[in-house]
Length: 140
Length: 295
Image 1 (tube, rainbow over the protein chains, first blue to last red):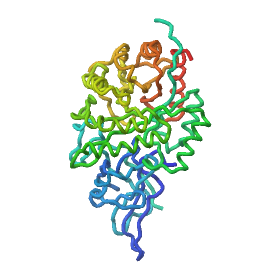
Image 2 (cartoon, helix red, strand yellow; image 1 turned 180 degrees about the vertical axis):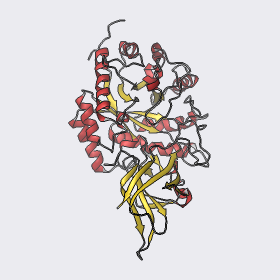
Image 3 (cartoon, each protein chain N blue to C red; image 1 turned 30 degrees about the vertical axis):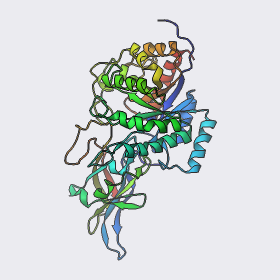
Image 4 (cartoon, each protein chain N blue to C red; image 1 turned 90 degrees about the horizontal axis):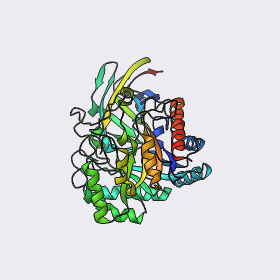
């Protein structure tokens, strides 16, 4: 089962390459939307941790074992993001995050075929906002 | 008001009602248990509830039928989207969009659904469909026949039944003579009270205001082509009355006209993410429906 919050407790870790270098961090996120989305309908935004912005184009989204850049996500109209599954959001930050609490914020939204196209955010390129997207999480 | 005749309307629940809990503290079986527990006999699912959509495993499909049998629940309606805004740079053409929704037709057919809530791409907040919608629907009709499913366009607040595009849908039905395109009337179209708590959801999203609510008798305009209704509700009070929608008037008309479709609860009120509150609200609504329809 998932946690209620979009950002999940389990999965918040620093990432380490094969040489043992800490390359960044990652966390898990579900959409909290009631409908299953095609990946191309998802609109990822920036990740902000402790006030530091990690631009959306540098974030990698892993779904079902495959890494996608935001540009790659937009081409995948054939892969469905189930409401009961979480993506792994991967952020580059040499050295990673320190042990303890961090405030993690992720901006995201989606395009739908029945939401007023006029309700549109040109910066994120979305016409319907995600929500519940900030959480304090622990690095152990 | 005349005494309502016993009809064949079937009382059920849409899993949309549980969407804040599904996958968090409720499994598919929990949803079925809850529906069974309130004496309801049919269910609406959305594509969202099919594990590994659009390709569920054989094991999942077998389990689906086991659940239907165990809890004596009939598949009522399968909700899906006629998505054309799949790519940022372009709309899907008719062939591509139809190819995609045939997947849903097959899946619905596989799971025992004959009625679909088919969401056409809309142009604006009034739910007017995009120009040329009929080309998409027309192309999908032979497949709907083949897989024995009825695409139902939802008449959803702020759309009133007397809205022009509903008239256009009716003309399409008459012109083609099809039995595979019709309506799902969402009871929110009859909402005639707008207390502040019912106008914004827990996520802070304001609902679009209707220009005019449908009148109960308006349902007669579309009833012969209505295969399922969303029993939308915003708040049930302790006297088992829905405080924003004239249920009694609408249901009496439907039953008196021998409507035989599925009526599935769709909770749209606050505190949807609180199991205790939600389960109680659903039961209150089912008491209301039982009292009105008489069974």
